[in-house]
Image (cartoon, rainbow, N blue to C red; front, side, top):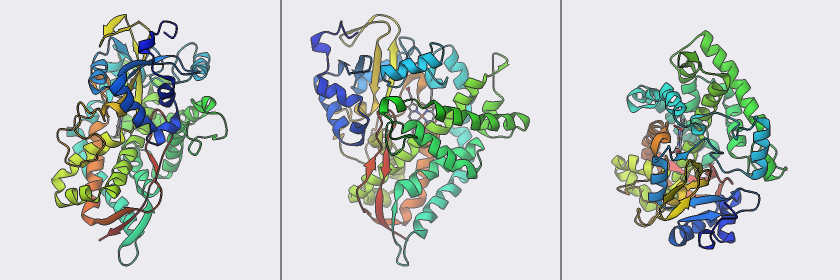
Length: 433
Ligand code: HEM
């Protein structure tokens, strides 16, 4: 694609470089780049040193359309997340030519994708999740009690909301659903941070090695697999009602699923199941601390809590990007895509598209409609979206009636990643009744 790229399709180097720069996702540079692209080149080609060229999709409308056409735009033909050429080569060498270290739903296309999705889809539907509401509320109350316990006798407290609450609450929820004992949670949290935070020197397993070498830490995946293999064997021997038992005992076309596919399933549910929800919860707390009027609104009218949840997911958009691969030559939105071209869907850009959202850079708990696409769209639409929204709703239902005088008590920070990111430090002060 690089040789063929017409000059009018090429994104200026200064803008393109930002897209593959993990640090740019930790500040406003990425949003400035997206705003420029939406206005000037909503479907251009990024040519970045050390990365295969890719189309950059920044408009809400185009992201939806591409996500909807799953046979024209595949997930699994190339890496579904942005990778350097060096990392891609390394993975292909290790995996006998395949560009994937794992085989999760994200890496699959039809016909396999639907078969594997159907194994757990009903489990993730609201009717089934309803029975978990009480169990989740107990976990939410414990999180709120922790904030109250950190307060003095007048109810004034301080904490790093990410470290004390946001990281642990969704983790406890997903681990209890998976049947992972609480004593193993610290290990799960660390592995997830190492996997998603591989480009953040503070979160990566080996922060001193260059980013390109840290992109895919095979060691992290081996550690995850070893853990889940033991869990899976236990759930095969003695199945219970939990999700891990469902996965362990799944069959496709009458055959038990393979070790790689079972481990991949565990890893995606365990990791996607908490990091994204933690980030959205912390993103909301950050925005509320900066917008006391929005906090007052939702405190005065709890029926706005589902709106707060949706807005926090739009606002934070923890999954910044996924990639797709074009399966056949096609003309799309005035561009000629060739089979094999790689595309980056920029969800965080679609979620601030001024053609769809009024005043997109404002955090509004009563935004209506809120047609955000933080959960993606089409066949791969987030499987855990109802669970994520339910967990967040329950936490705010428990916390908001007791919370007041919220303010930032230091400098917050976002993690550095061009794939999944969110707040990694959020010092707040507050009053709890
Ligand atoms: C705020 C929280 C979350 C956000 C923003 C989020 C975002 C996403 C996105 C963008 C995708 C890809 C969609 C696409 O390609 O069209 C996805 C897929 C997925 N998510 Fe989530 N997610 C969240 C929470 C969760 C939770 C709690 C779980 C599980 C417990 C989960 C499990 C999955 C799975 C299994 C997939 C793959 C679905 C497929 O390929 O068919 N996610 N998510």
